[in-house]
Image (cartoon, rainbow, N blue to C red; front, side):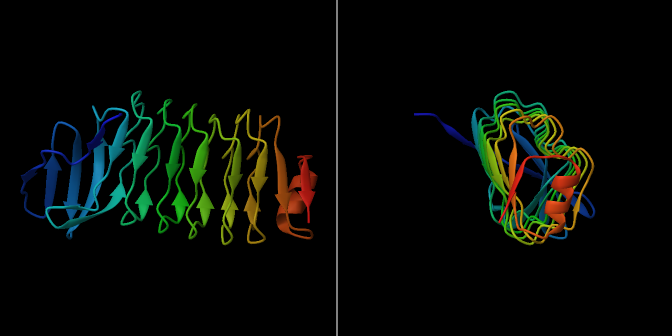
Length: 211
C-alpha cells in the first residue's frame, strides 16, 4: 500500500516580526495575518496531503512554482481552505495523474499545470472564473468540463493536449483567446447554440456540437 506523506510533517515554527515561516524537510510555508501559504515543497514521495491548518493557522494558498518539476508526485490532496493557487505551482510535475481543485479557487493561473504530461483527470471548482495562459498545455487530459460561471479561457490554455477529445463549455463564456486549443488534434467541443463559444469555435474552425 502506497504511503501518504503529510506535507506538514515535523513542522517547526520560526517567528519573525510580521511574517512567520513554517519549515520542515518537506515543505515551507509563509504566514501572514494568521493565514498560511505553501511556498515550496520537496521530497514528498508519490502522494501528498496539504493540511487545513498548521498550529491553528489556516492554509489558504499554494505559492508560485511550489511543486514545479517535482518528478515523484502522482497525487495530492488539497484542502477546501485553499482559495488560490499561484502561477506555475505544478508546472512540469510529469507524473501527476489527477487532481481536484478546491471549490473556492476562482482562477487557474498561468502555467499552473503546464507540462504535467501524465495529467489525465481534473475536477475544476464551481466558482471558477478564468483559465490562464497555458494553464493546461501539454497535458494528457481526455475530457474536461468547464463549470458554469467561467468567463474566460486565455492564450494556449489547452495547447498540445494531444489526447483531449471532449471539452464542455458553459453559456457563461465571454472570451476565448487565440490558440486556446492549438494542437488539440482530437478535440470536439460541446457548447450551447447562439453563444459566444459557438461563434469562436466556428470562426477558428474547431470541431464542435452546439445544442
